[in-house]
Amino acid sequence: MRKGILATIVAMLVFGGQTLACDEHGQGGIVEENSLHIPVGAKSVNSMDEAMFNETIDKVEAIYAPIFSARGKRLVIERKWTDGTVNAYAQQSGNTWKVSMFGGLARHAAITTDGFATVVCHEIGHHIGGQPKKKSWFGSSWASNEGQADYFATSKCLRKFMENDDNDAIVADMEIPALVVETCEKQFSNESDIVMCKRGAMAGLSLAGLFKDLRNLTTPLKFDTPDTRVVSTTDHNHPQPQCRLDTYWNGALCDVDAYTDVSDRDYKVGTCTRVDGYESGIRPLCWFKPSN
Image 1 (spheres, helix red, strand yellow):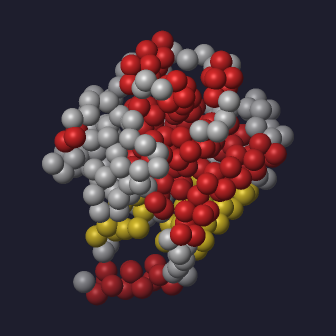
Image 2 (cartoon, one colour):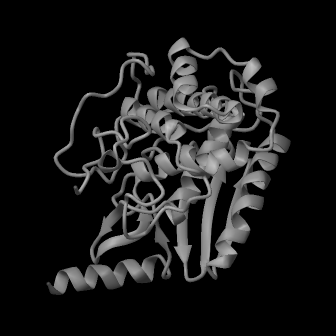
Image 3 (tube, helix red, strand yellow):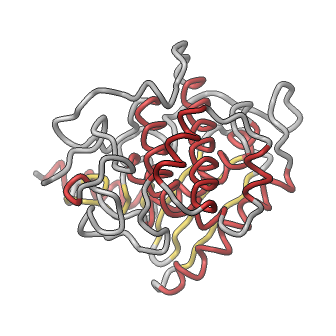
């Protein structure tokens, strides 16, 4: 017991009262800690430049800074374009809630603009993504867990990010799998929602490409090959890459309005759940264990 208390005090002193969301279990940021470094000017990367990096962050920040402010918090997004780190982080220090974005991740060959926006949304989701929360020494922590941050990213944040865009024009330039087209058109009746569903799915596929690369996987991650595992308890760390694609995909399919807030106490609020009769748009059982 004394050792546990001492460890807690040491941790608080080391981090100066700051709590790192993605680091609570030593698992890194939106992806596990990795040694990949993509500097400015690296070859064989995507078309992301510093202007697009900042423009994407600006757009998410404009949506969520007032939402954080209404909660009495200050959203700070660190923009580290020249840093080649392939990751992203969230942390809280008092009323300052921070997101750290790195140029290395933005430059990864798999990352599209929408994929990068989804990363920003994922980190926002650690702060306000609702239940389930990561576990800590004291029970539940402030941070929504990895799977929930993924689900929040496409079910809430990315929809707000996309809603005023010319989504028809954007989607017209994408090669979208037939399953995505068919499923989105079946799930939604409003054309605007259909197009955003398709765009959200492809943003998730972009990130799946990043996860696949960082884990050196050879099996393709696809919408028609969902992860069939069923966890006995909710996995609060990084789900397997296919499972994460399934989560982004289901977030895009959930038809609960993006402006219906999630809850810090009840995972069913503001989301698509099995208990409410949903069969699509639900958090996958490969990481999520419903409490009822």
